[in-house]
Image 1 (cartoon, rainbow, N blue to C red):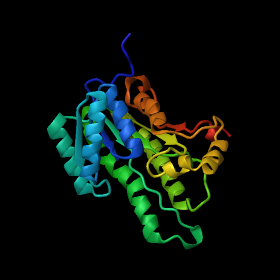
Image 2 (image 1 turned 135 degrees about the vertical axis):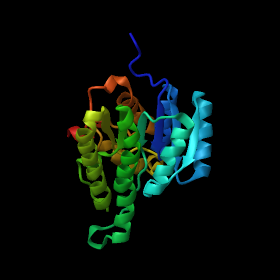
Image 3 (image 1 turned 120 degrees about the vertical axis):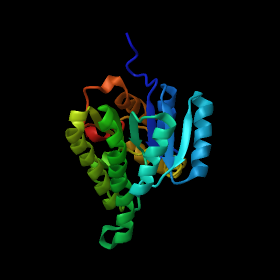
Image 4 (image 1 turned 45 degrees about the vertical axis):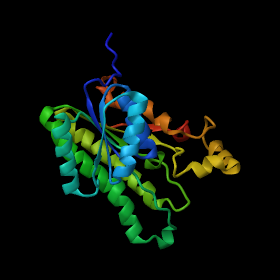
Length: 255
């Protein structure tokens, strides 16, 4: 039987591919056979990530700069990918930002920043790479959402939770709108994942135990925990699935 999880011959673009979660997803995608393009605004970080991923998987990794909030920049990225590989089969939107602010005093400039990246950026990337997929009548899009898509949270997270709710609805709506073109649009929804931005939680035993206690499986999520579901959604194994968010949360959303 054909290995329905393999991605051989596919071209995958990972937005935010040098970040904690994005790099893990790009590594997994490369390991399963796809040619990976990783993109963000920071070429230095992208080159380092591409080198690391290439050494680990032996795959072809292309770093390209792009600003996901700028349509002109994304159009140039699409053209660069097409020039390099001729097509795009998989898009992973792994970029993200959180700015924690008290809701009574939430500065709208901070609100706009996180919406620009998390929501506008997701839509722009889907729009421009989706056009390529529409022409070939085939494609897989995986948005990185969060458990905050469906569960609110305190601690200054009103803006972040709102953006992830929006990402969830973008995922569902594009899945419906683009189904006639055989474009599958799904999402993964992690709970807390330990990345360079959240490593302080793991390093603080008291804080780590607090977060573990909220998770039925009793552990903190790691970037590699997000890989399996992403490979599944990018591969032929998920060819009858669209418009869904798979929550990677140790059982958190089950309670």
